[in-house]
Amino acid sequence: MIRFERVTKRYPDGTTAVDDLSLDVAEGELVTLVGPSGCGKTTTMKMVNRLVEPTSGRVLLDGEDVAASDPVRLRRRIGYVIQQVGLFPHRTVLDNTATVPTLLGASKAAARRRAAELLDLVGLDPAVHGGRYPDQLSGGQRQRVGVARALAADPPVLLMDEPFGAVDPVVREHLQNEFLRLQSEVRKTVLFVTHDIEEAVRLGDRIAVYGAGRVEQLDSPARILGAPATPYVAEFVGADRGLKRLSVTPIEPADLEQPPVVHLDDRLDRAAARLRADDARWAVVLDDRDALHGWVSAEALTDAADGAATVRAHARRMDAWLPLGASLKQAFATMLQYDAGWVAVLDGERFAGVLTPSRLHEALRRSVATEDGDRPRDAVTLDSVHP
Ligand SMILES: Nc1ncnc2c1ncn2[C@@H]1O[C@H](COP(=O)(O)OP(=O)(O)OP(=O)(O)O)[C@@H](O)[C@H]1O
Image 1 (cartoon, rainbow, N blue to C red):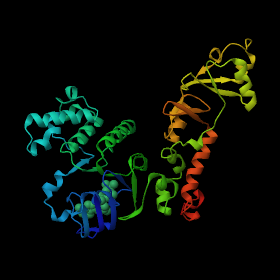
Image 2 (image 1 turned 60 degrees about the horizontal axis):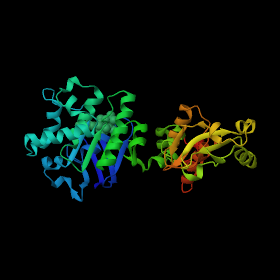
Image 3 (image 1 turned 30 degrees about the vertical axis):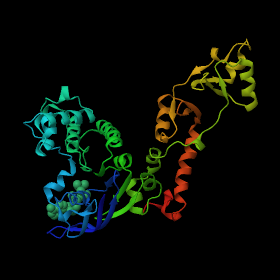
Image 4 (image 1 turned 45 degrees about the vertical axis):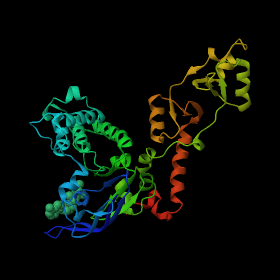
């Protein structure tokens, strides 16, 4: 969808901002450009909508050289979101959002209808916020209007230059999550500039890590974190990349432990025998539809006076659960939140097993090891990455 073919940009003062860049962004893909200040990320992006012209090489949009297209028509196909949102201060939020559809010839009523839909899509209530002026919004709300406005013409491509850079970390994470939800619905082709590796990892289908004017590595978040291609990338992603990796490694069936399972209506003596057979200190308790209820300890079962009673009398509720495919980071956070030594993992409604801290650790090591297989060993060991 977007292709850079050996693109170089040298500014008149001699600065080489981008040096022989080749990069492909597939349709519907979100590629984050991450790197330190001044490494050429913004220049790269501005060459797509012709705010900057390359010195050599070509930028293709849908197979067409952007140099051959009319800049105004080109920009209509490309939504652009920047940090200083650039809303018109004297126009309401609704009118700001409706600007592009109006320019494109929509009637005022149709443009406003569309604007209201978009505000809703980015999590703003058009009835509440639509009539306000930009300075009556919080920073996070202004950013949302920026995103809504960029989507207004329904462009296939979005360029986003540090769109969430100006808001505090909590609002920022919130906006990132909302943007991910939005992107799963609208599936735009997105180039997203950030200097924050956490943001790059959270949002990117792939990440391009920039050194000075060059892409040092273009890869999935898991590979960038697990198998940095150069010492520069390793240093940029940081020594705590094992931790960051938690957020991009999903829980898989093989990661799960299988404790004994009993049902709410099982007799206590049978349940106790089941635990003894496994030499287990506790069992997972399911209800009659095999949905998770909680757990019961071996002690509670053996101490119970009436063996003919059912597990129900001694079962404890367990609310710490996650779906298969959730990230190891979510599992870790859930364990901390519930102060639990394990979390139940469900496959749809069905109980699939439990994740314990030691299994979580193994899962993390295994995911690193799997990806290390095709890389030279010295490129991936933690101790060797620092220059
Ligand atoms: N118009 C210009 N004229 C001359 N040099 C420029 C111009 N615009 C950018 N540069 C230089 O080109 C290099 C790359 O700048 P660019 O803005 O692309 O970097 P960036 O990675 O987006 O940085 P930041 O994260 O700080 O926005 C920098 O050295 C910058 O000073």
